[in-house]
Image (tube, rainbow, N blue to C red):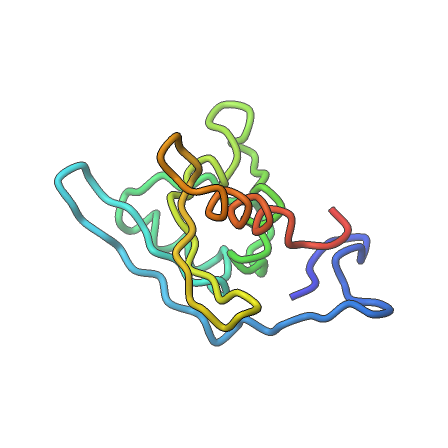
Length: 132
């Protein structure tokens, strides 16, 4: 964790940083509509790029191969493809998170039918990286 060229995402003062590198699974899901990925927070972009290339899957990833997916997505996921295809977060369907009450929750992209709690958690996950 803590990637950012100018060091703004590194922890200082009272911040905490959690090492997510052991969450390193990247799974290809094949369904009737095509292929999608389930990516854990610690998977680095280099691995995702390789998996996507090998399986002919488009993925609007950044250029810094050592960045983990968790931090990349939480800052929106800017990439060289963003102007044409949008940000990485535009492609995310759900997050599985552990909240402060120790509950594992699946948080989905807000719609008219999702709860206010879901929507609040979705937007809080997107603001989870300091300094950006």
